[in-house]
Length: 609
Ligand code: F6R
Image (cartoon, rainbow, N blue to C red; front, top):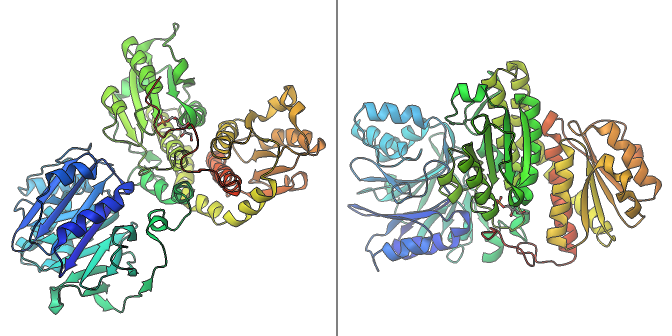
């Protein structure tokens, strides 16, 4: 989910590419770079925000072709060397890439054996070296790009420029790319925001399309040719109506809504290259010694806020799938208490930002006590990754909305993989059961999409109930953290009173608050003990509270005022339910015109204790 931009035309490329990068910075901001080409190729790149790159760039440059990239790391921390564009050994081929090359290990070994020298830790760098190989074999620039891309497995959007070749080549697989037709030049980008000030006349590339911007095959600079299966096609052109601000949000009114809708692609990225449901195996690239995993007595999660709720979900899965005691501590309350053997305790910090002061303080206490530590985070190179023994990345891409949405989903999905990996390594999880869970994970992006397809229904109910006195969320087992998270989301962005309860607790006190003016939202799926929760739903209904249930089985509907269906996904069904809760919270808040992306008093990253 990085940002890509390219230009080839009659204007000097540098200002257009840097302007594109500034417009795309919300897609990634840990490093950035530019490659400009004519007879030669000049590459500039820097870790940090785009402003750091701008300081390193010349004031002007003569080239008319250029590509740029703003990065959100998935392989290799954010350093100058790992910033894109990446080049081949000759320095004549430059590539920017968005996505993950799943078979890069294999390709890198093959290329290194053939004498290629790598200068970064990224998966991307295999692409320019593959192109170099094909050029050395006598292939044309276009054929070399096609051959190289044909060797890649995974998801990618790739744009290539070469010294002495008056064309940019752009192609994609499961990662967006859009071509823009300017008056005096052509653009390509991961997102229209990059060039919206210059043109609204665009073509969205389909998977496998190859766009050639510029003078290859007899075109002139500014022309665009799109090929599908090796043949030129007549591209479908459309004119965008979006304003720049809306474009940055992908046409959504808020980043939060965009990020809710990004969950299927974020999940695909989290799973990419890591799970094999047929074999029942997971590869998370962790270096946990088998002996250590086998002798583990406890997995202790530390986290704050939404990440704490993701951790609660994960702890239940670790106990269920890896058969080891798992506990969750609020980071700000954490002490490495007695009674634990630090050598047999794995302490896992769950933090999307990797910078939360409470969580960092907790992990330091665990390290001091001698426990092995791990971070589950969205941010390569963040402080937490430098303090722990192992890091596991959730690959959700940048999250701009203060309220965490897609990161919660990707945290739980990633820790489901971790639970399976631990279970397999400990020999406590059969390969059949692992296959089942991993198949459910594989199906998760599609299942979440089915919920997103019902956005209009959720909006309608949210608008009807928006003026209620308070909102209660209930669930059991894996549904309990989802109830807590549902309530947190609603209170954060709508400023309404909302609380989450273990469904069985309702009758022990909170029921006194239940009235016809307090909707109750219940998780009634597999993994949340729906039959028992239904009893609690009936208690609420008897007090005339409107009851909304997200359910995957039959039979609950008659006790509910509103029933939202959850696709079959075993232990992941409560996680899917959370997407309904996110949409509900969003539309309640939107009806009150709240500052959804930046709720009052809150910050995206809380770096004070
Ligand atoms: C809620 C939210 C916060 C964070 C919490 C921890 O929507 O975003 O509760 O979850 O501040 O942040 P990280 O995960 O960055 O440690």
